[in-house]
Picture 1 (cartoon, rainbow, N blue to C red):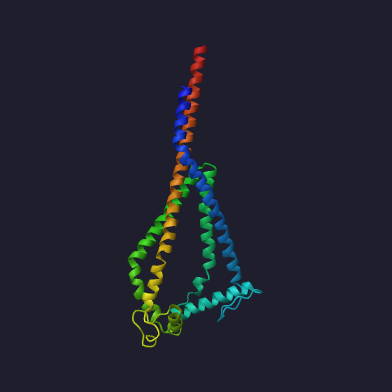
Picture 2 (cartoon, helix red, strand yellow; picture 1 turned 60 degrees about the vertical axis):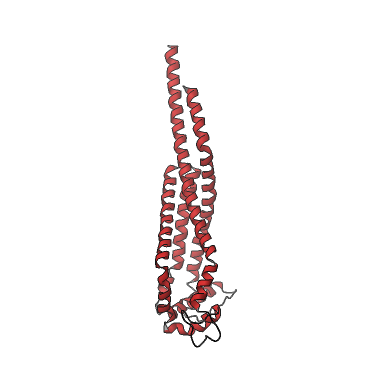
Length: 268
């Protein structure tokens, strides 16, 4: 009986050992990198949050001063913030001021998820792997929802941008710079002021740039999705390996106990 249990244990180990071993290595390496990334994001967010406490809040320029890097960061931040206010007519500065906090929170989320995955693989903790799988699944589903929303509402972006930004009077002073930068004229139709210089609308130019780089965007999105799917599969394989190991140990212990009982009964 004990010999039979050993043979069955070896068969089960061969069938699942390779997948579970690969899953463990993958989860440990990948999530160790993400732990470091989370720490880096938390550090960067903290530095930016501190840096934004310095500098000129009404800066009209953005330049880097090696002698005062924190002051330069705050000045550039406020310059961009004030520029957005002029273009959109809305005060987004108060919202943008929470960007460092958002980076810290995002870094914390990445760190926590990676810790669950890494500890679950290293310490063979099924509960950690289950939590890791659920969190990765939620993130994956959110990305799918965002992609669907972008596909459905993407065509409406053209009219939104033209009405809210391009035709906004506060954006008029930036149109010429935008057109010179992208070598275009007008948004959907050529303006008389620049039609002699450029023959392409800015809408067509922006779409051409996007279409030229869509392979890169799609590749990055696909890479992230594949990583998440592999991570979920790896966590399932490792958890299945843990469950089988426990089952094997229980079967072996039961077989050993039954074998001992049979030996004592024979001896008596």
